[in-house]
Length: 151
Image 1 (cartoon, rainbow, N blue to C red):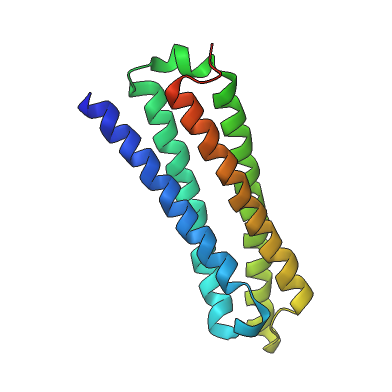
Image 2: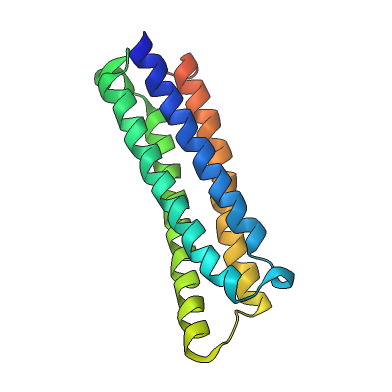
């Protein structure tokens, strides 16, 4: 039972890390806060978001392999597949934001140009969509852990 508790703890902490970094990205991606330091910070914070997403995937896989319910039970659950699909969508959105941040940084280094308001708004929307998807992922995780809507 201690292993199961530690696996659950690690998975929850990964969710909290990801939520923290996505929130930071969303907060920083505003026109009235934009300056050269923020562009560089967005690249770093987004990298931490992506690393947190990778840790989330790793801890989730660890739960399926070493958890009490076992791989057979977990991988036969449609909720797990829905969680994975939504998490993949989240990570795609964060990767799209990462590309934009890197373009901003390159443009800043080349000619000192900051992103325009519309580009900021669109990029912020990507991260916000990812954050909203995470709320659904967590709900599915709770259902899965409690056996709701499972086979």
